[in-house]
Length: 158
Image 1 (tube, one colour):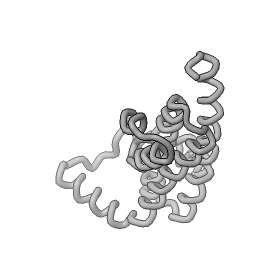
Image 2 (tube, helix red, strand yellow):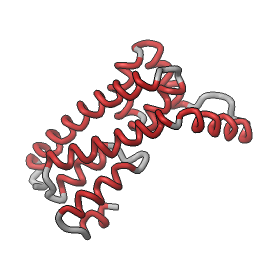
Image 3 (cartoon, helix red, strand yellow):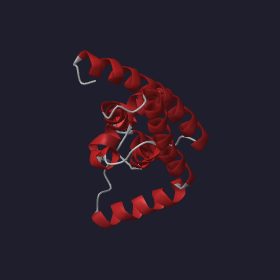
């Protein structure tokens, strides 16, 4: 996927990075360092990564009912009614600290899209999930952008 971004120039490079950032499992932890290594504008890369990840949070929130029904039917077919290791960990954090802390920690542990879906499955309202995941993404996007710029300069990659 990095090759797709490298093969384009100018505004198209940013558009391709945005399209990649929408994909599930490609969070700000991957998109921002890649964009900065490719000598793209750090501010633009941070905003693009945030928007791509936030769009997936919105999609999961909007289509939660359909996703939940599909997931339950799939789990029943496979006979996997017990929660997974990640679900158990997420529920523990959820019960101990609540949505705000879960939203701040989970992008690093689960990924933003899975964290939003998990928060919805654990019973949070859509508005609260969108709000707290948005706040979390802003914080992580800023931290990753600043960390990538200075960290990559420190190890002489920039």
